[in-house]
Length: 122
Image 1: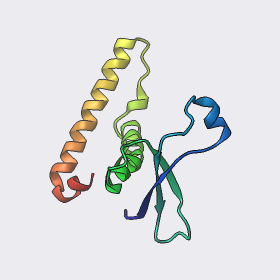
Image 2: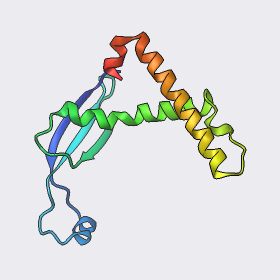
Image 3: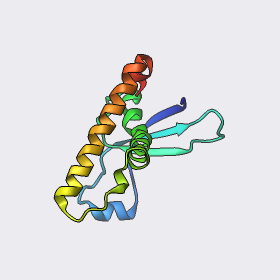
Image 4: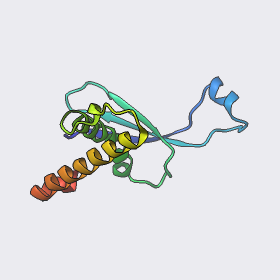
């Protein structure tokens, strides 16, 4: 998946924000916007408090990590049985979640070992 991104330095404003802080001037933030090639305008936005010297690629990685997390959760739930626990004890639930997590880690390592080129992008 490829997309275009722009990172702009901004200073958030607004009455609600001013009331929530005692500062006279709010600190600068970075606005990250994603603008896919097939769209007429940017479609996703993130506000970052990372230091201003960070390159845009460093801002994009955690912003897009959400998609990977959602995929992993769906895989753990559907393919590995995370949602199939029917016990009544915390110890049983903990055991179940631990085994599902270990199975997911094993599957991820196997997938990454098969395709080293894809591992660099993951």
